[in-house]
Image (cartoon, rainbow, N blue to C red):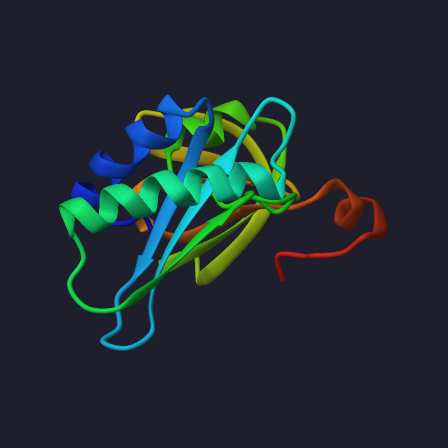
Length: 161
């Protein structure tokens, strides 16, 4: 998954959770000029702009003091949205029965993208049912995974083909 380096996660996650939010995940895309640090947060009642501002203010202060990132970068705090990204095995477990789209680093059964229902998690593998086929996908093989929103399923959108 496209999770930020561990030292950034270890620094940022406790701050977000200390403010009363769930840290859904952290993406870091380094670049000498246009780096991006994106933090996805969630709360019991969803996320409003004020929540993002509150977290941004706290995280900015800590990042200025700790200085864990070399070079320039843009800090973005965001709600995960209806097509929330997955960063942890526990998120697949929590959304068992939901539909996800998974992109893979290497093909499994000649497929690099699989869309299907999460049927469970076994050790480090996620079980995905697409049609009548069950795929056992190693978590480490996933480059990206996102929830497919209900409104797209009801419209017949997003197919795994």
